Amino acid sequence: MAGGGDGESLKYTPTWVLALVCTVIVAISLIAERILHYTGKFLVRKKQWPLFEALLKIKEELMLLGFISLLLTVFQDRISTICIAQHLTYDWLPCKKEKDDQEGDGGSGHRRLLAAPSDAQGHCQLEGKAPLLSLQALHDLHIFIFVLAVVHVVFSALTILFGSLQIRQWKHWEDAIQKKEGDQEQGQQQQEKVTHIHQHDFIRGRFLGIGKDLALLSWLHSFFKQFYGSVNELDYTTLRRGFINNHYRDNPKFNFYKYMLRALETDFKKVVGISWYLWILVVLFLLLNVHGWHAYFWIAFLPLILLLAVGAKLEHIITQLAREVAQRHVAIPGELVVKPSDHHFWFNKPRLVLILIHIILFQNSFEIAVFFWVLVLYGFDSCIMGEFGYIIPRLIIGVLVQLLCSYSTLPLYAIVAQMGSSFNKAIFEDHIQAKITGWANKAKINRKNVDGGNKKTPSPQPPATESTTDQGREIEIQTISAPSNGQN
Image (cartoon, rainbow, N blue to C red; front, side, top):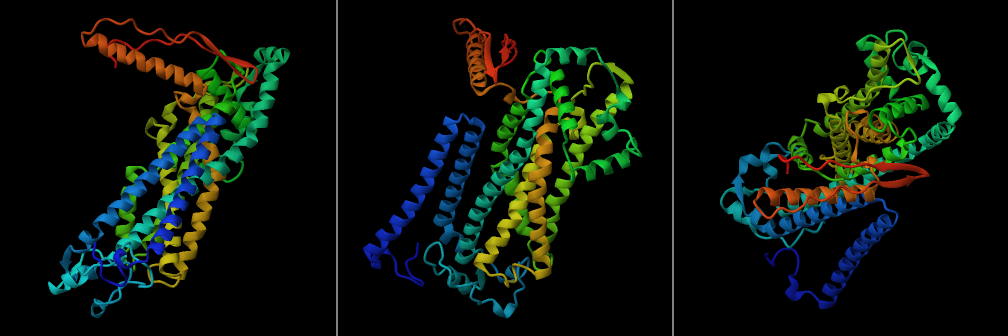
């Protein structure tokens, strides 16, 4: 890299200054690394494996950030020596630029660059052109990527934390059900009783009533239901009974609340990362940030609209479950039971809801990250920040999305996502998952050896019947079938 510019190179930098700066940087890095390390040990000690995997995902994102930072640092001079036609620099700008300002200062010059500037700008000017990207712009982009990743991880963690606190209020519902299930005499009475469907409070609250059987009014009811009492005790009890009857009929004392929390923790490790399609959104949003378009103002409405649509859909799934029962039966023996199914979800894919929540959280994090990035680097009055009338609504929408997602949409997702045709692997305890996975991997290896003409190796036997205690209740894992011959 060039050694000229607005500062001395390392050849003329006092060694004590160099040592001091290195000490501070290394110390901060080691402190951050130790914090992550001991956080991981704490989660392992508490057997919070899904959260531990989420922490590993955060480490992966930090490693990716480090690699991006390295690329920007190594190739900054090479990028800045790429020249383009001068007239191309006057279009698609975040701030309006006059042609006679082409030799402007290139931004707030008091900030330090990634490294000492080179003579790339003078080189391009000699050719009558402009650099593709200045060192100052590279430096600002470098900071933005770091801020975006940090804000996304922090806001995702806060969303899961506040959502989990909201869900933990349902624990006393589960405890009351477990206590009731433990009363054998009362359980016998429940089996002998007859439930009149149209008189059941769940059906009357979700399906019966003025206009609730009409599609449009049903959607409107679901839309507004997400803002108040999105999940009540009756909803929890009914959906829990439907899940157990469909997936775990032999164990009516199954702890649905504990399973639901484990499933949410498993999903958290997917939400906290930045997937490839989210990086595409970043590039698209940066492209649309053109002066006069107020793109970030309009983009701020996108996560809000998506969040309201997801919340309404989740509420409507509960309504559909009630409608199915009400249309099929007039009276049934025992308790009312709903039938979980994938066809209630968009494109028959319950996981699509999680992807949308991931996009919503990332878009909201993008808005907040852009605000703080511009505020720190350019100031509140900068043209890139936009007009005051566009800034305040963006911040208000960001706060609303964060609160609504934490206290309504995420708890809704936690319970309604279990209303699909299949169950989450979190239905098994962590050590049972590990044993099942290990046996399946050994079976695949042996199957490949047999198909490849190697000496026949006896297939591993499925794990022996094993019981685990879940607060005094036994869950038995019976024989698991080996993979078929045509599968690997």
